[in-house]
Image (cartoon, rainbow, N blue to C red; front, top):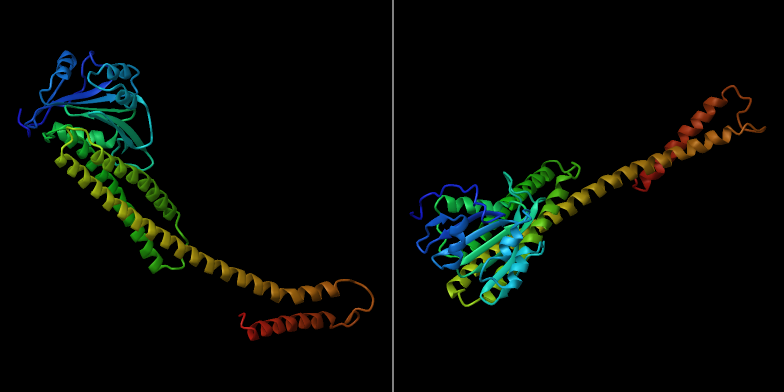
Length: 338
């Protein structure tokens, strides 16, 4: 089979391997073939190319199959079977085991649906395990089905990280577009209220940052403490992926600064609006206070009140109230409060 020939999709790996979603043998030429049942067990004992096995841990029978895989350290198997939401990597002799993040498999990656999957990687074997279908594993699996060549397990791993980085970058561009729209709105309508979407953007940037930084640490750790089969070229490839993560982290930091500055500016505008409203309320209170005092005074109903028996008493009282309002407004104007 040529490296560019598409591979028929696999729907069932046979009863011999419970919980196995797919299994491939990839030859040195890059050509890949689906393995099932007894053929897969035989291939595990040989080193003709390398194998990619992907397990569904939501199947209660999958851990037994994983534990029975040959040539894997007990610590690596335990790490493969232990659910974790912390991205990290460990080296056990010639085997690398770790946990990395992914987005739940959907039409578009969703930051609110971040999942994690475990992996074990050796010179001739790559085992991945997840509880929920992930975007990254699914996309690279499709690439393999359509003839993409992966010379070794490490090339597969870096492709998975590249795919996750691409999905993260796509989400980052969408958040940047939303920030651009908010900034344009702020320029065109400075009196507009702070939209709720700004809080969503800032929360999304925090979530992205939370996933990107630990993943970079995983790559650096792999390149630094690598097993014997992990060549210098492979380490350089890991560093290139880490550099891409660095660039992504810088973009994240820049967007977070933009979002923070936009939040501060919107908060400043809201504070100005609030101060204007308070000023209006204060002026109204000052203007209405003297008339209120006068009406209260004349409403006491005790003998001796001015204009008590005067037919024009009501007019005089109203004139007095109007005069007090004019006096207050004059004082406020002189004090530059209006």
